[in-house]
Length: 292
Image 1 (cartoon, one colour):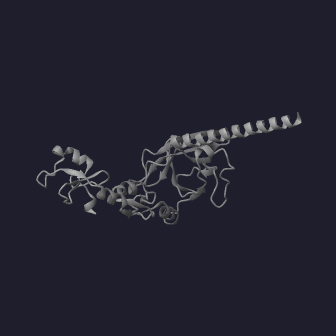
Image 2 (image 1 turned 180 degrees about the horizontal axis):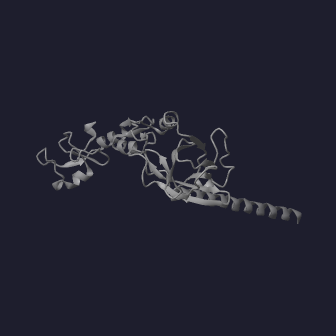
Image 3 (image 1 turned 90 degrees about the vertical axis):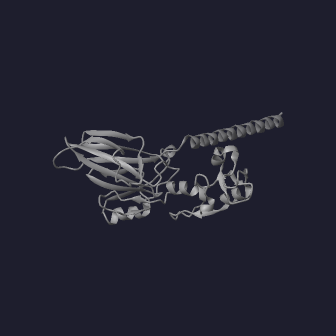
């Protein structure tokens, strides 16, 4: 696909595209064209570069499949960016010495069958609807909204009904303390953004509320990230039941644009209500006229 690369910088071509006026296959991007003295072609004895609409149409219409097999067809210039953020991109097993890699579906099977890590399912939803259970009625086969998890040292796998994968890691520290961390396993480390909250109960008369504002996203290429979302909690030495992470609750944030759209929808609904009330007033006036 080198013919779709800029002759100057070797980057993928995108509109606008320029070609030497002799018609030779010397295509360059707009950035390289601006850098050339008087926009002249060095190869063709200094002839001008002109806009090439045919090549622009080609770079926009030639579609290639994603190498991760997600089913998307993308332009050549958008292929690299898409594959970096593709949800089907490879993630990695964080266990030292394990070289397994795959998408999150394959990774879940690997975690639970090969490493025998315990797993829980839960229901994923947007933070705006977390207090409206009627919006997303629970399905017992998909899990629950809130999880009760024993704070036993080790890794636990959490999977949402939409297939999002999380690793909850509990590590024993000195001075009778526990470090609890959570990471979202995904190839795209930018989006989406999750939060986590739970109540920590480590003895009968003690309960502590914990809120992690942003769960770290990672493909686990370098293992479990050291700077992932975590908290330090007290622990009780000796026997008895292990401390409990009670009501563990993962929510997915939305950006400001989505919030704006939802607000606009609410405004439209309010306008509709106003219109209906005005019609009711009109009907009442007609009835009064008839009575008169």
